[in-house]
Image (cartoon, rainbow, N blue to C red; front, side, top):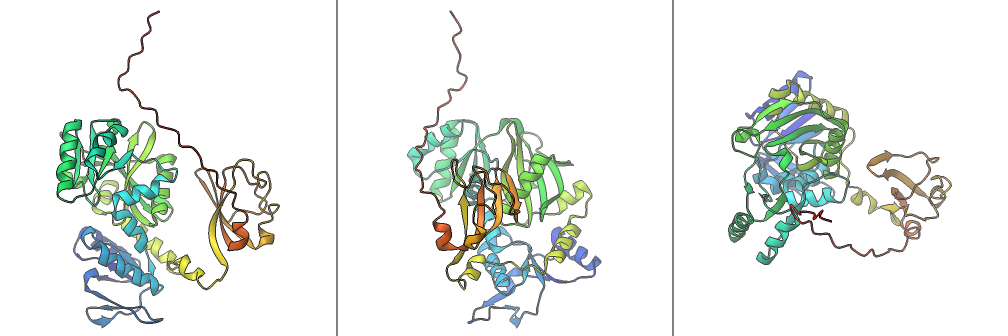
Length: 399
């Protein structure tokens, strides 16, 4: 395998370890400075130039895109995708992960635990937003901060309001997030490669610091995650479109809550803590996947007139409930069920004899006209107003 590591710093720990791991396994590997590329666009021939010379062929690339060059870096990864070179992380996955608001918006529609979060611009909305996440203390985050930069704990509503107003006056976009008290100063980093958590550690803040980032002086300890945390980490990475990711989670009383999914997780802290060869696991995974280049299915479907991919839902009372996929008539309509989603379970390529249940969601490929006829008429649900919880409310038990 010929592997390109996209990195602006060939001497940093993560880049060095990945290069060493690839060489140890007999692969050809080169570190390519992301900023030295030129993207050439021509009909039918997407191409890349590196240091003003046409780039030679690569089997795969491993992006290590810094936050400061996200736009150009993802453009380079996207060009590799158009050239059918396998990317360890897709350009869309990197883009999704870089924006904290965007990533939480994507995760929020799935059964993934996340801290209650709100995003406001109008000054009049700040106080109600703080109330909705449970009141002070609250965590205030810059949308594009990294390594704990731009994360502030506000102990009172007045302080929170002042911080938000100050940040917004400097054109900064901020999130207001519920403070999970039981996990104060602690979080979990799960390192996901493909569909597995290959290593995990707990980070603990020191002194009065509530941010547990290693860059902030936090200490680490290796841990073995239970099934809930492993499943949450893998699903969060997959939902974001990442094959290699560091998933940061809080250990709340309600279970794992995902704070962030990092598309360029550092290796030094977690390899030093766990003593595991994580760089080797990444290289082995890429080598096993090079025959499966990233495909933008929307591009491929433009040549399949009348065909497409969509999600069919099986609501309560549907005529399909209790029937197998075969009995539903989908195969007769030239509709193929690619994946069945049932609660938090994901069932790829389900058997035709699998029985459909209320609430199932089917990812299908087939004739769009046939699938449109199967979509039930949408029922507009009335939104129930949220019940406001009174803090420290006392119940009068006098009789």
